[in-house]
Length: 421
Image (cartoon, rainbow, N blue to C red):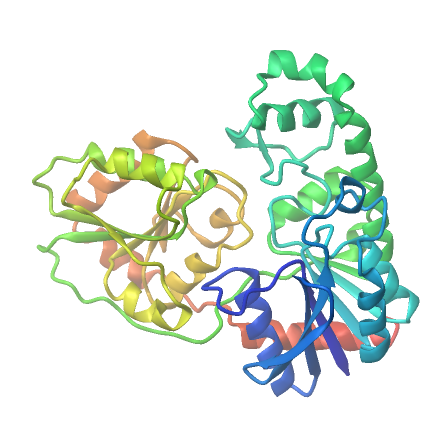
């Protein structure tokens, strides 16, 4: 069974996210008798081929400067014929698309369907396919949206992200043409549902968003939670009278909520036995990174560390007592949360999907409302005052799902689809 794993982007050197997920899935699918190949776009003018960790990778060409019609999928992107040629050459039995964009969207699904593939789609990002034009599923960039697409509201929300306040965004949205484009995106989403034989979601919260917007039957949606790439087990045995190390691993992005964690940390008395280690992906000069460093105000207890490579994950978790995941948006996993639990490190995180679907407050971690600086401060003080809390949380951590398990589920799903179930 040949399985095409298609991505909207692909960077083999990536330290996390969809690329690592797909690479790990491909590795285990190969172990279980499948023939996986990876396809992803590349800004070039011809197909390139190579192997990454023993898996064939095909990069099909896309334009470096796409037109608006190409981005909105009103026209097939330049070089699209090369993608068609590639699929006709590969002839996969299953085409599994991981996230969509203009570089890997409905036109690409149509080709897979036309040559007889069974089509599976996994939506990894908060945009939920074509539903959220802002891409974060956060209304006004401040709080989690209910996910229901309303052309006027969604248009004003997008304009607000461009600096136009809502009281102007609503009347201006109609003149801007955004509501018409939102309706176009809804039509695209409806087509995506019709093209997919199975739609996979990473959390219950994301399944609810799809169902709220209609156009898809519940039987077509399946839950496939994220997993860790390999089994890891370790337990920190730090003395309870030593300092507590809080860790953060992730992107330097406002939706990740790191600023709220920094603010809460600044409220903790300076002589408290607590430190914060930030392992973040950021470019020097990035505005948000600069604002984070300003908030830290040279606090000697806050350390900014280099980003983490996948193979370094276990050793990094050995440096911390608790992982902070202060996200403001609806997460897909996040994978770093699962990696922490696999390493027996408790998590303090936002009470959002899917974090709250993994963390049971007081058992294997602690939850606070997204963006609630006071709530984060309370938890930090709780960790300081009750030194038996962290060991109890470690004891409450159970087994963590692995990519080996995901690959078995995917293989069985693919076989069912090929049998017509």
